[in-house]
Amino acid sequence: MAAPKFTPVDPLENARAYTSPDHVPQEWRADRPGDFRGRQPVGARLGYQGPDQGYALLLANRLRPQLQLRPHEHADDAVQGCTGIAMRRASLFGRAPVIHDLRMAFTIWGWLDPDSPAELLTLRRDAFDGVAEVLHNYDRLRDLADTVPEETLRSTPAQVAAAYPGEWRRLLGR
Image 1: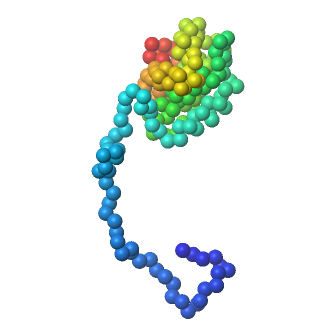
Image 2: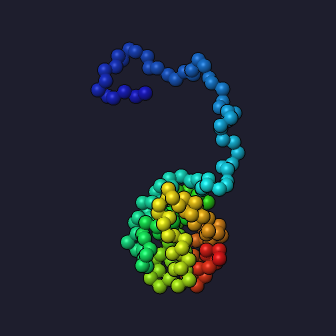
Image 3: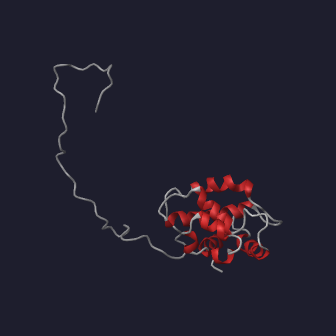
């Protein structure tokens, strides 16, 4: 390791060079009973794994002022529900969430549209009611994240924006 310039060094001392350690450990293998082997498991209540998913909450809260709430709707429910959808989309691509994931989730459910279709509003009210209370409504929150088909999640933000509101049923797999 290099030393700072002000450190006194004996000019007659030989510089050390790298030497291999006396013992080289064997390569590591996942052979313990609890070690993970193969692909990530898929199933109920396992979610969708991806890096830095907590960042989606920061991004969702940045969009909070743009939400078009109707009577008896809560921004916390919209943020919590759409964050799950956005994290699922990001994990499909193996990356952290970005603002486009959140915009797509909010767009699909009409949260950014002041003139959302009445049928979508009814469906949204039932789907999002109370999901911000994760301790009591975790299963509903997971179901909400699973409602959006993978085909929609793999679409580009421009394709989703072009399809909404005319094809909102297709975007939600209805």
